[in-house]
Image 1 (spheres, helix red, strand yellow):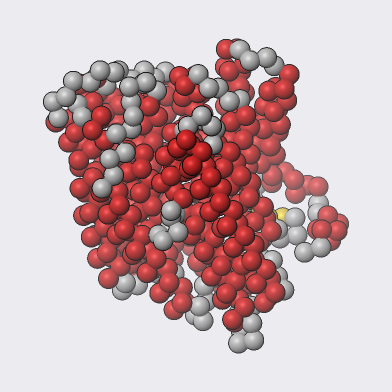
Image 2 (image 1 turned 120 degrees about the vertical axis):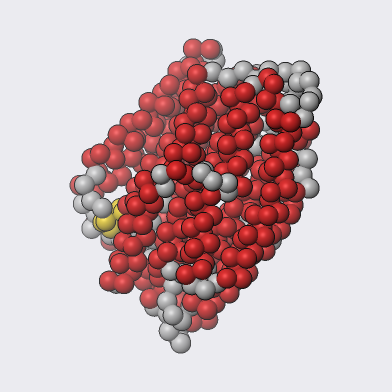
Length: 493
């Protein structure tokens, strides 16, 4: 689309729909200016934390000024709908929960990088714009914004060789994925003469089918790399291990959520001509990711790498039900993306607290007897582990049950069997963690310390893990409406 045409047709009134994004951008700019004018001190550290929390709260508040449930703004380049709003609120809340841990983590390591606050804001801004667009250019720019922010945050602790290695791998493979996305966008635009994914999907015909399919494959490949689908996952365990643990949790929760949203938006537009190719390719990738991800997690001795491979396996669970290309499948996928962001973040935040101790090295053996020293932290970690495994009455159980139901409705029983097999494999390493924490008689020589904000964040995540598991309709009703609305809009076009 011609930028002059876009600017000429833009009503300034439409900027009210961008208030949450504008607030986050202003927050990043204010933090950047404060970093320049303020001298390093304990006061500056506290000011940065509380100003960050303030701007995130203001961004949440600004959603109340929106009065549209579906609206294309800025000449169709940006879409305001319930999925986008719901995703952005979730991303802001997840960021709010991470910041206190990041603040404490840097204090304990005596390496306080003020840049991390406004870089986190910029990554959040990219996630928010990624969650609200069908436009290829906006998606591409948003991907770049999130990816570059993650590269920087992964390499924050430059003194560590592991940090450097993980950051380099992430940078190189992430850069390749961005190039692949750009080539895919070029093919799709050339085939359809449109930058809107919805119009691109409806433009499929015998004349442009080859170019369109090649473009779609390249574009989906870029997202497969971003969410860690096997065999495009090689960067993820190293990057997750290299990054500061709060940042790892942020990437695994808010980042994964944002990267999945464009794929979720695509599902209602997969027509009958593309369905067979979509189902076969997506289901095979999902099956490989579920089995191999859990098998690799089973042999890990480093807890962060174990949770990284667990994250890969969960991407496979989500992808599996997307292969069904149905309203029920989309509902299950949306539900699972959101619930994983809760339980996945909770597990990484517990590790972040443990990592504050100088004696902690993230080894699985070190967690033995942890219950003796910190009951709250051990119980919280056990709750998140059981949720990741899918034990009732946690949100993980509801999520996996819905995924299986979504596959069964479309008679994709073989993939449901793979899901059950993958879950059985994961039992080996999840149960081992809980057994070590509560049943191994080992003397622990350190006691984790965490402040009130960290307590509140972990406690809230534990509450949500149980509450949404026992009362799933609280989240499910809203997600059902979102899925049905997306399919309704697709059918009207």
